[in-house]
Image (cartoon, rainbow, N blue to C red; front, side, top):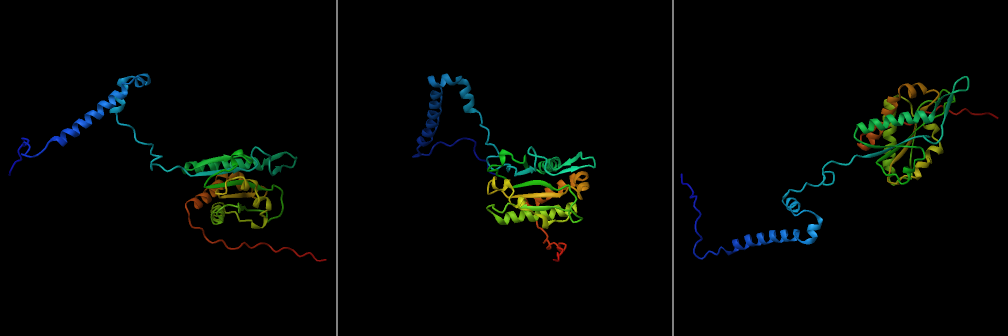
Length: 273
């Protein structure tokens, strides 16, 4: 095996070493210029010279990973607790006329659990009041306003949930998708029927829909009737909240939704003259 000589060979005849010397001198000149800059009076007033040298020779930290393609920012979701900090909403009374339950307290309980569950699933969640000033121009991937229906007995058909979307959003397809996801997941999780026949103009024209950014997809949900659905609403609140959470996640994750058959409503009685 032939070994390479450890001795450096002399420059061959005709070979000019001056380019190498020039590069070394240029680097030294640059470093000295940097030192003299740090030694100027202005430099002295701004800190100790030795500290400046230490900074120049110390490796600088890299940019924040969240700003340079590291972690993705969490998706923001808004949850409105209907009637919170505004009024009581629907009210339930006992036989003595005493208040036993208000819609506002039930909405807030459900909304708080929804917020907690979404945070555990790595969302950024704003819990909003009914007329929260943050609603003006509010920007999020989705907003859900939680309400409940009357505590007065209407009839045996007054059970189930209702959902309506903000139809003036910029993307009607996404609004329809959030509605479909919420309807499918909430119904499957809770077992409550979809009560489409009682969706009112108050839901379709909900005030927050016109306050938020038109890029924010929003729905309002009435999770049940406080009369016939009271037991599941108050005793299985975690289940109610889980249905809402799964609807939001279905929308965000672009999950599939089973086609929903048209509801069969009871016939309207004919009043004879």
